[in-house]
Length: 140
Image (tube, rainbow, N blue to C red):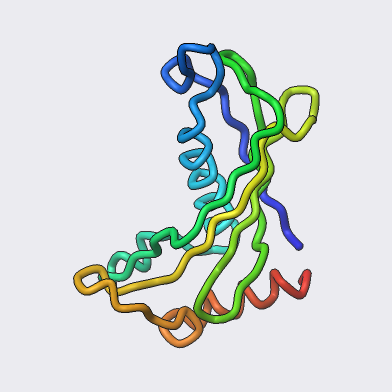
């Protein structure tokens, strides 16, 4: 299974009054990692959007293990955790400068028509994405 690593430098505005990264920012970082994974497979979200299709988050899980502070450099590892032709689950691991897991989690997505939010099958709508995801799950 391919894991894409994306470096992040923690910016001051991403921290809270305790001096640590505000918890909602990890979801933004997950999105950055997910976008890089998709790009590494040769795709872009803008390809979907050209067809008035978007990919909303339907579920998110985050586990906070160690605080991350302003000025630190971290790395987001992103991979395809699960996929069934309709739902896609991405896995994430954010490691600190000591290579310790600071945050981990998953997000689940579907694709929908932008105007109606009617669910679509990724398998049928974007067969090339489907094939790439199946290869990822097989470790190819």
